Length: 333
Image 1 (cartoon, rainbow, N blue to C red):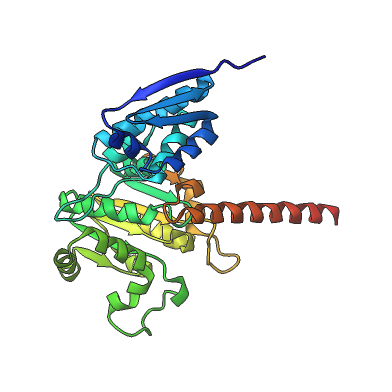
Image 2 (cartoon, rainbow, N blue to C red; image 1 turned 135 degrees about the horizontal axis):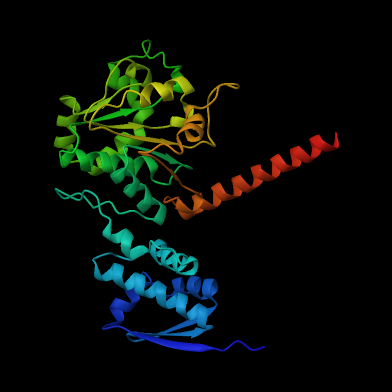
């Protein structure tokens, strides 16, 4: 049985606009051709797609998505192009155009923050609609960075009056008193990702003022006991290293008008053997609780260098194989 070959021509006003849809690099079209089984030929301001009906339709969806993103002011990167193709293949609901329309901050000369994957869009939407959100998954997926962006957005919009940043200081055993400096200096090394994000998002004078007047507060998790955190945006980072008691303690500190974002990678637990991760317990206990959402990130959501996603995927595959091998060996014994 022969498969009918279909052709479809897409025309744009200028060659420059068309080239911008694939990041001005014709070699990127190879990704679309390999993924969809089509050929894509460009001449002047038009493109000819040729292949199966299913492949051509998917390619059309990808270019419609990219065109909408470009016309809304977005600049298409290689990652955006690949994402549009992947979303078109999977018939996903969230494309590059919707990502480019979801913008945070960008005031006073700072660059707008735009989600890079459909899951990041879902994460932002969850924070906007729920009081407690857990962002779970590997490093580099934007869990902490986007939580900080949402915190600063809500602060500047006066939806909260302060931001509280915390994480368990496992390496210091939460016994920080012996470390030199004031509390901020003691805890700063453990909250470096949040500080780096904050510097990207706030002008230096505003950052300094917020830190000095307590609008942005940093504190080790152990110091949260006994407090009521009202009208605040609380970020608990590295939550996989909380104990069950610490997680319960923090979540029950939340007061009126507050939001709590908990981020962590449940595959990277540094607790001593036999101690249950508070993040793992929360995931089991709270998954059906109203007002609480869990957003799971995967290696495909990694927004660092492309090789990082491949490294994570390879490790997961290798470790999964080792577990299966160990299980088979145990059964044979």
